[in-house]
Image (tube, rainbow, N blue to C red):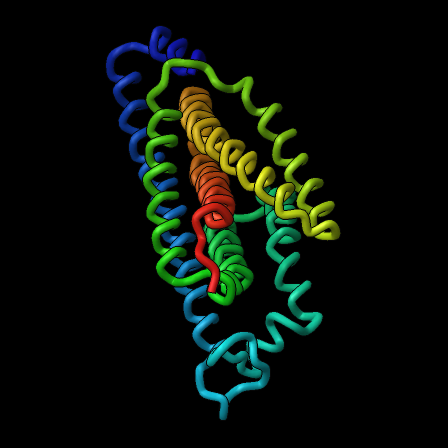
Length: 259
């Protein structure tokens, strides 16, 4: 944010207005790409869950509850070794994307982002086996309202929150380690703590990433690096997409009513 104010003081008239207008267009593009990614994820998760489950015993390959069964697709996705591929493929892809983004064209980077969103949708489809559709919908809207408020604050605040980055990343690493440990312990108390901390960490990251996207644009536009802005928008959309997705999942652990 301090960098933005410096540019505004150093710039003059038309140049400052041009950067301001470009920034608004850039943020609109970031939010647009993120929204498309979320739509892909949500629709695919819903569609896959519908194909993977059934209430017709004649189509069932396995029973998972009263009057609820898995189809052959559901057994393959959720009970076979394929579930580990589905679980870890998005993680591997996002790391490879980060490493290769500078070598990709803008169109290729956009395609990779949408493919990643589709893989997340496939992985996320299992929540429909655990939680009711009503609680998933309610949690989504709570997450959306929270995300909008936090992102708006990150965009408009004059406070420089760049120092939050290192602490938030350490929080993410701690959450990953705690989640791995709890995979074996299956502790309800530890899961509650992970969920609470997770919501706070990704709430902070939403504001931090929004301000970082803004400052990145200003730095690039001020230095004449317009050719990189397209991919910067895609990477910004990916950051906010991950913030929203993780905040949604942690909130679902609190708010979700199980089947």
